[in-house]
Image (cartoon, rainbow, N blue to C red; front, side, top):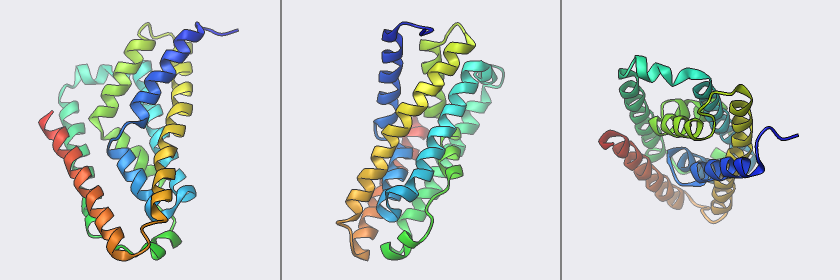
Length: 200
């Protein structure tokens, strides 16, 4: 027997889809990973990003958001940590050699990288607070867990689409010059994401 109406689960899934599949710094990195390492190796990054966000979502639902009330400066710390991490990843992309064959022989980004980016991304915190506020505001543990599990499934599938898109695109970027151009475009997008965090 369902603990909530099916319409609520559909609404939860729609929220998770809209929040997960739209462009953002995590999806930019996963697209880039798909180009460089292929689809399967990039699933580590996908799993890490999904797990990192869903752990944050779960903890927010269980009361972690109160920390933002008690320590308002924590938001600023998270914001600047996110900016620093994005600029670091942009630098790595912009200075990469573009040797795709060598990259594909490597393991690719780790799960920790994906999870870490979510935890230093203030937009992820806001999405988690908004989601739990909309669907589990009463703090019912069953609903918090159900939302988190549903979000995980939708988020993983959505973010994996970016890895697949990158792997598909990588088939056409078969020389170092094209890869370097792609890397620099991705680096500019990450810098733009970092700038957005600063001004908002």
